[in-house]
Length: 125
Image 1 (cartoon, one colour):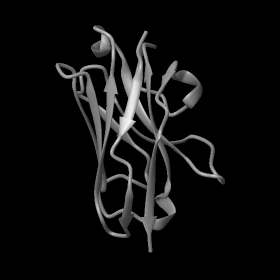
Image 2 (cartoon, one colour; image 1 turned 120 degrees about the horizontal axis):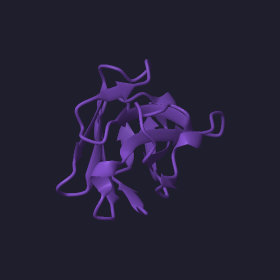
Image 3 (cartoon, one colour; image 1 turned 135 degrees about the vertical axis):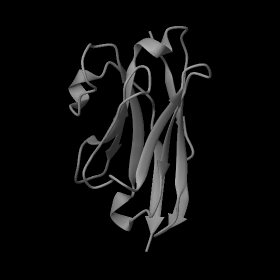
């Protein structure tokens, strides 16, 4: 099993940057692909970005491409989401999630077995 803990969320002005962190427990963290999702009152668990088990491939939602970057350090059991040029509509609770399923990381939250508790990101206009 994997336990995930997000951190780094806070209030930031529009156009600002944040780096979210996802700390994982478990010795086999490198066996899991990891994704970031976000939740708002309007959207339930919207896909943001994902990264393969070895970190060689990353995937992004069209709305964040070229502004967000997902990375991981398996030696430290960490995954990061660097978010630049943030927009007010990106105010949400951000979650990291892990999956041991084979194939490319899915954009479907139902494909992920382990979730963190989330971290609040608030972007002011």
